[in-house]
Image (cartoon, rainbow, N blue to C red):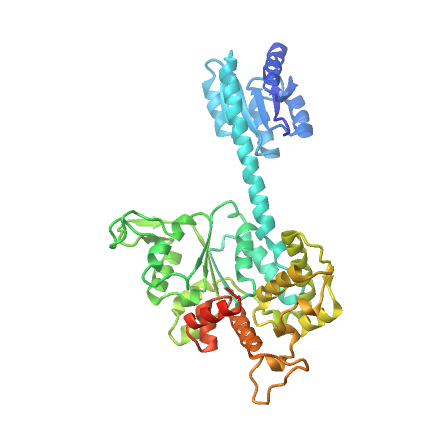
Length: 456
């Protein structure tokens, strides 16, 4: 592990020598300077983690050095060394961003503790910076693949919104188009990246509990409320909350959400005190909210309040030129994930995937590539590693008034049933309730058949 770098700045040679000797015994890499000008020259070359500097120096003052350091590298910490009684200047230094100050003559044991504590802060800041960089690399715009004009428009909007103070965004598009990725990119590409990100699926919360989950509740608010609980909005304060499938939010909760957007405050369930929050709200849906507001199933005032910044994520069938890029992106991802060495896809397999309508959109494509990378015994994906709904002619997987067209090799009813279940799951974004409705069966029946075909 690299040693921490410390720069000592003092015009007294004995103090510089003494500090260097003592700090090097603690395994720090120590540099010394006798003036502000020399200090800034060393600072630019070495970028030290910590600076120990006298306030009174010939030429450039200690406060001027401090101001310059904070402009050049905010994460570097500065401890001011001051003569006894010069507290007023030390307080001014703290206001300018100094980490701490120590009085001369120092107690070296106390000084070592102060330095160690400061360097712990430096290391924590470094870890936070690394974590934020990792989060941005994992969830930033680089993870959304596409070059088509429609996707370029999406990228442009995400960049603008992420760097703005916009507090309401509406993401629209079919299931599997990447609305969750766009939401995370807006958060992690902008100034809120270091703050909390909360994701809530409105369909997964029972109607009786959704307000408590979103806004929290007070102790005794209802039978099981034994403790005060913070909701998702409080937990996301300063950051972002994604309300996925907002089209399924109960009307009563929609009214409360509208008040939160307008007033930036709410009351916990059973509470009387307003809770004030600063939260960016990103709403996502695969429903036509304009139509829903017209037929009365979604509040019109909330719809128009949410769509200040609307972004439409196009279905994969409308951006087919992106399919080869996405395939290669997912192959590379799953190669790393499963330690495989699949390099690409055969021409025949690519042709089949280009022809397929992708009802489950990018999510379905990702699942298909994951399966193919696991199954592949060669260094490329062949048709035999693709699921039957892609390799079987479209007539076999779509309803038609014409007679069913059987492939030359034949097909079993079990294969057709399994394919229909897979397509329903893909189209519903793996929501079993919605998939069961598409297939005209109960959720229990769907789960039984999913177990039968090894899909659970």
